[in-house]
Amino acid sequence: MARIPHTDQAAALLYHARNATPFLSADGQPCASLPGSIDSRHVVPIGSAAFRDWLTNAFYSEFEMAPSPAAFRSVLRTLEARARYGDFPSQELSHRLGFEGDPLTPSKIILDLANPSGQVLEMDSHGWHIRDNMHHSFRQSITTLALPRPVVPVEQPAGIALDVMRIGGTVLYVDDVDATADFYRRAFGLGVRFFDQELGFAELETGGSLLAIASHSLGEFLMPGEYTRPADARPTGVEIAFLTNDVPATYAKALDEGATAVSSPRRMPWGLEVAYVRGPEGTIIGLSEPPSAPVENN
View 1 (cartoon, one colour):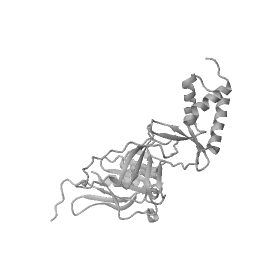
View 2 (cartoon, rainbow, N blue to C red):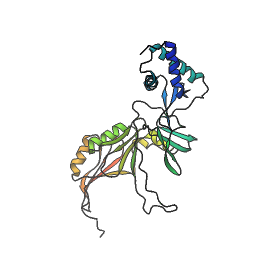
View 3 (spheres, rainbow, N blue to C red):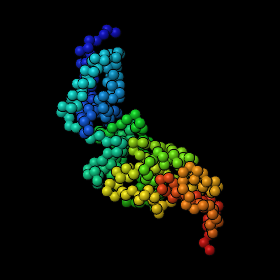
View 4 (cartoon, one colour):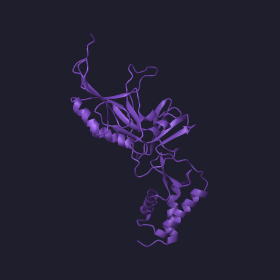
């Protein structure tokens, strides 16, 4: 294929870049909003590998050749200048979570699902909805993983509530999500089924109800002005209960992996052997034999 002159390559690259909207982030980084699916867009820094790959692919799709380094550098400088001095105002870029309205009392919270379709999960006082993202700017990195689509609950007829509320799970708010999840893995064999480092959130495999680990910073974001970190990292009044066929062995294993003793194994008047430890993050953890039959009241 005949070589395209540098000036023509630069013009062709700029032509393909017309689908990108250059702008400056609130912290001063030149970025571009790129088309994703038909109804969504995603944001990348202009100097990132993701943007270079996008523009190179557009050029190659037409000419079946790579653009020259000189033409590419020229176009990147031009787009960065457009981001700084062009017509589009600077924008705030969110990391995974965004909001609408007052930061302390947001009218809507937006969660970036980071999936190939570019969708977001919008949450407000009326519930949640999955939307195509055309209005919110999120910063993603190579560690940003796609989140699974939430399960849509069975719709109830208007005006009719569920007869029985169901507990969706338990969330422990901690200083170090990674270390806490690792403790529950080592001490009790709970695998991590989902972990988002940027969000500060992990879900553990319990074989039953959901047990999640979240960062204090996530709690402060979700409950602005109302979330309070536990004093001296020792939450009280809440117990995470595990059933085990061997309470003494499970108790000893938890202590070996970093838990502190609260109450050693002993037989209760109702016949079950129980013990208590405190996790490294401060949570009280109860260990009990599974009941073989319903307890009778005498």
